[in-house]
Length: 124
Image (cartoon, rainbow, N blue to C red; front, top):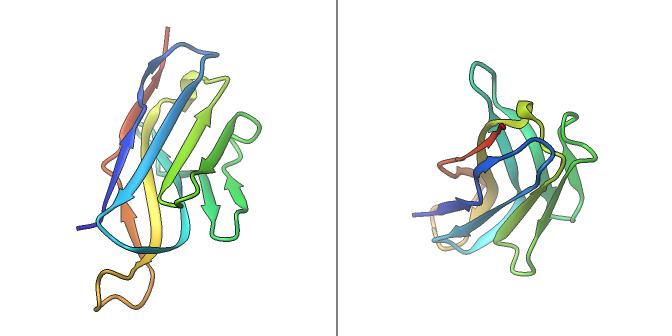
């Protein structure tokens, strides 16, 4: 019953900014990584940004210097601050969680969980 709830997607003009959020619920987590992937029409899914348990971040090459990932102190919510948006940023953005759910006694190894996605459209 783990769920990732995303919000913040929508229509924005080129050069504008948008802030996405993702909150995990339905479990008691030991988080390895949490972050964002995206998939544009006709293209494969690609890494946007992820946070590792130690606090370091990895960014996709196409968003470095423009996007910033962060989390709250509960470590169940991540944010993606998107600046200087370009039309090529248009995609469905998916939240990803890699974690052990301690509320499930049958779970011992980390698993991947995915949100349903939120659409970001950058257009005039």
